[in-house]
Image 1 (cartoon, rainbow, N blue to C red):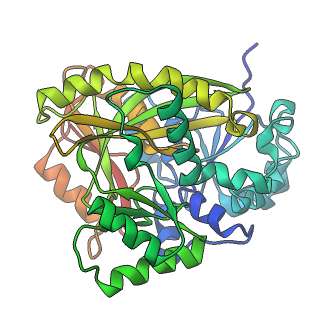
Image 2: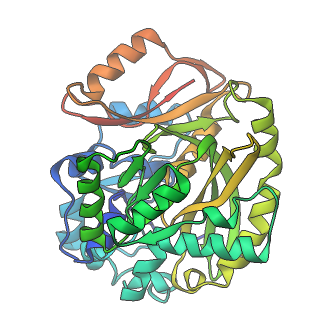
Length: 409
């Protein structure tokens, strides 16, 4: 018998910052709160009609009808505050709580909903937050997986060991690596979507740059330091972890700017503008990475402590001899992620068309204004219920929406 109890979804992409802080009472700053609020409906693309999405503002029927046209199931929407205080809702029998990512703050928010969850969920490791989970969500954990992968499963195409991530707690340590590698990428241990990154590509290093790096160290205890590589392509492998077993779901190509911040995902294959050699490399390299990566991850504490989706970001780059190489485990995102959503969006695009999935934010311009301009420039054309070309908004564009998500085919 199919379980039709509802799952409860929450969009909280600031979960890594909440983990870094460690306090259950942690709140994101105002602009990040606005981002979470404007994009709160995004988990609906994972949901079924019986599920619930926690939001700050209920979406309009006009918006949800635009999604129904493409066959998306529309879950229920409920205000966050009402969901955790309304006795009729808190007493409702449910299956699982599925935030975008877990953190002490997410557990505090969702605690009123735990009592009536399924026995399977209540008996899982996700029912409570334990202090030892913190490191599993850090970039330091990913660097340990990378080191194991290189030692146990060496491959000529993998990044060499002399370019492995380093942990630094002082400016002096970073300066030594700057002398060794020439250019650096500095990362906060807990951050997401390309935030918490600081490239160093010029010397002498500007005092403001050192200020930002030392502030990261003060805030999170240390920084992750990597060589700044000559990037050719970003790839993310998507997995699900359930009862200690890892299942591969597919891979997605995402793009970032020069600072490493997330720009969007390619849909229906790699971009046409890519060099053929990069495409060939990207097509054969997953078989070198995925089986050993699964074996390693299944032997870690992550397999015992987590259930749900996660993504492994990789980086294809050109070395000093212009030879293609890959960092096979750049980061592990222990949460739902944009790459997973991209796999869902490919289902509504015409099979012979390519597109991009992007999130929007431009200070001084609203998503409402952007949508009006894009619809005019790129009118939507569909064939047999699939998008053939044009612009399609994936989140509602109200006059006060600063953030949004969309497809462009």
